[in-house]
Amino acid sequence: MTASNSAPSQTRRLRVTGRVWVFGHGLTTDDMYPPDAMKLDVPEAAKQVFHAVRPGWTSEVQPGDVVVAGRNFGLGSSRPVAALFRQLGVAALIAEEFNSLFFRNAVNAGLPAMTVPDATAVFRDGDTATLDLAAGTWANQATNASGTVPKLPDLVLDIIADGGVLPRLARQGYLPAELADFLASPAVAAAGQGSGA
Image (cartoon, rainbow, N blue to C red):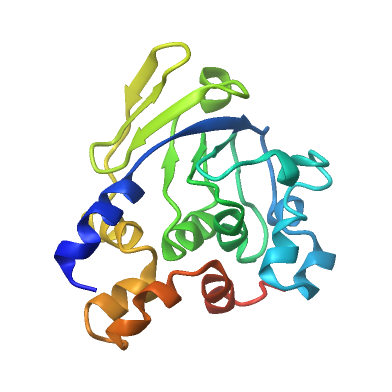
């Protein structure tokens, strides 16, 4: 894939508009990826995301939706939760505060993530969120609330834009270029992050 062919896709990853699902504070990787689900293939494991917190959520979430959470989002082990979100079609994550390891796993999997102060007060289930990671802006189209946050470093934006760290390495020639799209798949992202057990 050449840079000119990938540019529109890269732009879409950095600019996201989607329906919002709001979750609370202190959600751990166990809440998102229960231990029993770790024995399953990625498509089946993805059906268990938030099972104990919001049963049935995975049958309601649609491709392009945005998950909003409060403080301490993603505490726990380094389970490849971002890959499960991508499998479900979640387009981005917003949180008041991310666990740093969880945030980096999202970046490595090519899942846009933005820290927005008071996100759980600004957004409600069903609202439409718009994020522009490159500009560091966010908006709630339902309420017209909007704001800016510090822009992520260019390297982080580049990794997200390329669909994750492995596709980026392929596009840069460190891995076979023809594998770039394959390496962006949720299954490969999950395998690349390990089980987190």
